[in-house]
Length: 266
Image (tube, rainbow, N blue to C red; front, side, top):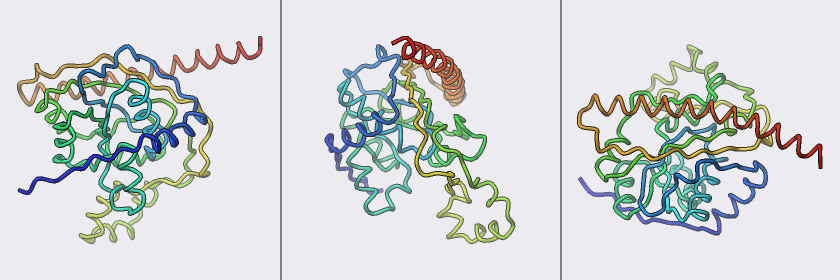
């Protein structure tokens, strides 16, 4: 097997410019920053919000510029089939999420940003806000274990609420005629049997909702010895993320109330 070559591209000025616009618009709040450590690379694992391009640049820029954490985001292959977009993605921290590219980034000492839900989790349908659609994936844990990376869990809030969906992809996937199209091997493979068909928002301008990010303490995985251990760890990690998303919703509610009160009193 030929080893894939990975040339790391990084344009901090471009990343900062994109992030600055998003930070101005979404006014992000970062919690749990005492759990960040730039001295040892880790695998950052969290929830992927809809379309994935609104909060990820903010997160990557914040970790790099505020905490000196050099991080590469493992992105879905689909991003790298679009000529201009793929170049932008590479320059703001994206790496094609094939295993060998991920390994090469880790060999070079980068922290890794992983969304186990991948392309399906980012293509949200109605009723799927803040759902972790990980299926039975645990390859990311094997990768972290191979390189001795701790898991650095985090959650993101706000991104799944900025768009109201007008067209739900599930409507299309329920149509017999469309399933006949998907039954064609090449089409079905390209569209992953319909998994990567996006729902369409009613409006292209996102709502101005404040974003919140929370970083939890790192989780070592050296204790994982069997496949059952790995599955249990993955399931416990999912449970942790769901709980922290709910905690963050409560924090946001109180935070917005406090800010509104302060504005009225000023």
